[in-house]
Image (cartoon, rainbow, N blue to C red; front, side):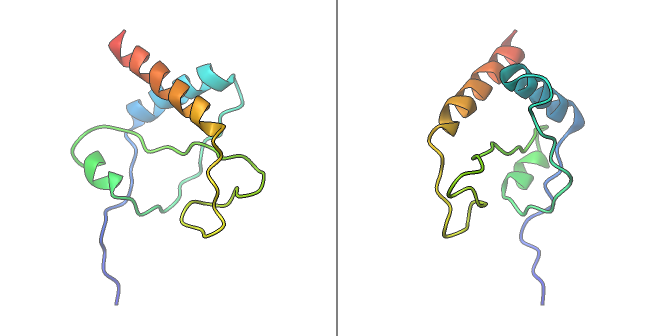
Length: 97
């Protein structure tokens, strides 16, 4: 028996493009990776049904603990916080300009 608990996560094209431009500005051309379609089950999908937005991943690096979240071996890379904070600041600047 399969119980569907959350809808598919579907990014809105405009918001995904804005996020991609902000990331490229932050890390440089060609360094941001576009994720191929995946099948995440995420409660953020409920928000995307009501408001335009974009679900994205912030890389954790390739070192020890680089597995996906929800894995017992996962270890958050604290160095990623600087990139994440800078992304949100640039994104806010873009929308408030």
